[in-house]
Image (cartoon, rainbow, N blue to C red; front, side):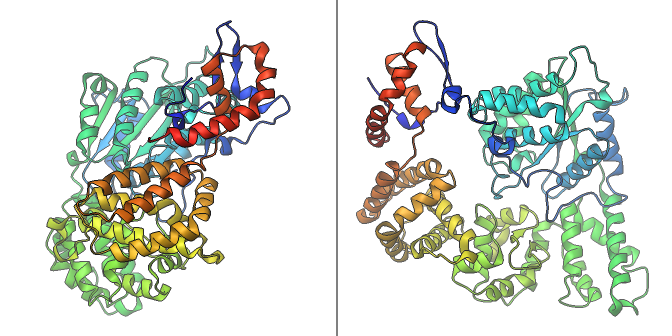
Length: 606
């Protein structure tokens, strides 16, 4: 009998056939007849801030802009138009460069579909945002939204999850069928044939912002394949940059026959950006009493044309420039004069904003670098605690760049860049020059800061957010710091080592408990193992460093919770148990759990 790789066993919702032909539903055995149906939100664990109606700053098309493009997408959603080749296809892919306004288009289209009672679900990927930056809960989130937008699907989704709780961990095709397609198809009479104007719309924005490229590619393949069935009840709207892995998936013969491709580069955004500038600057003029003496139109038509030309079709350039002019640090007309001297291109605008924000305080580089590389955004208070600064220090470092970084009105809201292109700019040396943030070094610095927070075991309720962030993510930052660069840890070795020693001796138990509570222990240990592999490849890496992390991994592995279902499926799979033997199985189960726990501790990564 062997339990090799026991850490990968997952028996949730499994149905096992024994040699006698009996079928055992493990989920039903575990739940018992008296268990109540769990709440659907608890079962699916959706990403609550991924939909079109999420809170916080949301970009949408400015009134009077992108009207031709939106009309084209709406015609596709209604079944297409005979003059637009391919517009009758079930999938639409809108592609365009960073900052061209794809998310604003998605937001506007999603709101239109919601108003028409046709929006089934939406998901706006965002790199670096917890939940929204990964694929893991994507389909579950769409399914939960569908249960709300189409209540007739809710009992069917609930039944699917009750019968098979592990659907979100299954193959993508299985997830899509069980959590989306089948509930929609079964929620209406078999004979019903809905007009295309009633077909459910799903909006998926920024595929390129998802960190799981392989899963994105697989999902595109699954959707394209399923959409070829004439009974396919969805029309799915995707947006992304022209990332190579995404482009290759949409250029296959199968994809081309199922996809209506729209390129933002086929639309001249100049007139729309002109409209945007005129509207925003007019509002600034009307709302600022200090500009009462400035004659209208302001800016002049030639000046607006220069700004439109400099924007080069990028709405993010236009919105960033307007925010820069209206940030309150000087009279708008003076800021505009500075903006007019900025050459075309978003990089130059970012560089100008950063330059004019100086001279930077001593905390600027560390603060902005941390914000750019965090796994999920933190509040001003939590940032201050992580970096051992005052909240005022964080604000002082950021106020000069509030046109490119979102600073909440209070200290409890998340601080994040307005657009991910700022992160791309700052982490690419050739583009940012003196403003370059070295990702490997910054990740190692964040890992050190996280370990200090964990080692301190802060119990102050105001620091709960940063404590949990540090517990869940210090391994990630350590791994990223090692895998992205060839470092000998000279810069961070002393502090990192001292906090690791303190962490191992004083905080390990608290850390493990926090990870278990957040259901993050297994994933975090996987990342820790990868970091260990990187460390072992570094020349002259201190052996104490490797030994401490190895000890942390070994002790933590023994703490991974093993469910009763895990044990049952392992025993059934190993010795074969018929339905008549289930009662006996539960009598000997405590002994098996003890044996399995021992095997489990020592079977992984040996």
